[in-house]
Image: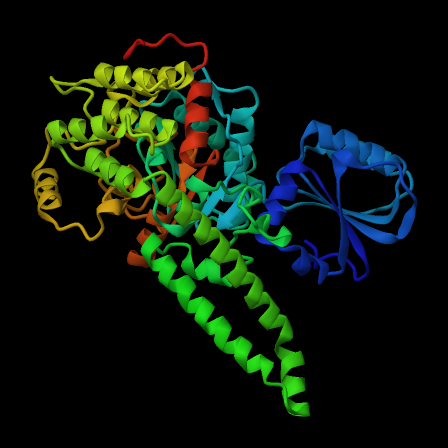
Length: 553
């Protein structure tokens, strides 16, 4: 998009969403190397000085508000020429409005550039839409935005998919039908039909696995998001005591940080050692750089200075981030808490689980929200147990003076993702229907666990395994529309979209799945990328206005 325009100094004019799309994948310095020296928001422009010597690259979503703002911009143009790129399909009527407004004939190009989503990694995308549901139905505008985002992924990759969806989810069914209609309507966008029959779009509902977003994370990328929060590839460290000004907000994006790209899937123990190795390498180079004794040394120093300065920034950033993670782990007793969570969702000893939770809930070191999440996980895991003591645990939370807001969330999570809301056997407690399922569970119980803190596997991993074996049950995941005659039992491309948001734990599972299944490319997307805080907020919004049925508090 930037390189396609004519040479010369440029300004980029974007909206709020496309600004986040760009910031995730491109750093400021990288964009400036392409002769883009200024950025503006379309909704925050002012009638400033005329800069006819500049070219303007416009990259916006094709929504009514942006069309109206562009019409105003073109009626009184501030720049010499405009190259307009829409992030998705734009209607002919909107193009006509722009043409009529372009009386000064400054528009050089109008193109559709299908990037209507945040590309967080080669296999992960997000629509950056935390609130997607109200009253367990699509929130206003959320369905249309989701259709556009998922369709944008399909159009950009030229994937013509077979669509399947989670059968017990009305929201997944409605989304599947709308995406199918959009793909059919815009079929002329496909330059080839080679991908037909080789691609599966699988639409899942977050309600089928409410456990994964609640768990404490120990993989670097997921841990940073859980404890510090990642927004558009940025992490705020402003709250860290004594932090330098240039580290108050840091970029954590694999496309802009080589060290992070290599380390994002390492666990907490591994990342500590990797940071130590990075620091030692930096110190060796520092000593070498300090020995400037000749003209040749000076020349080498000048040549290596940009790389050296970049390495210095990388070391400072990751040492600060890992240091803060370490402080939080110790302060809030997260190792013991996580061990309890993992045994709770992966084990089956009700008595032991209850005993351990009763020890942790009143512990002053355990944060209020962490105690509440433990009770949520217990209520979900042992919902049908004859000795279930969820109410006793809620009484313990009350004794600790936990707010009513959190107590109501326990009731909400049971209606949102309890047994009656799920179609999967999330905890492996149902009677297996076939011999292979029985064998799998026996061996799952006998296998040794390498890391007690990472025993849990997301439900998504099991679903992908069924897809690859051609065993995904049609009753549970029906086709949307007719089954194509060219359908292959093992698709080469699988796009999974999680209504209600995906997680970085699921992203890491997809990354590993792609590595161990050559010839298959799985991509994961979601309404947003959750940590436990954002997930609880979305559950609260989704259950708004609905009476509680499973657990009344």
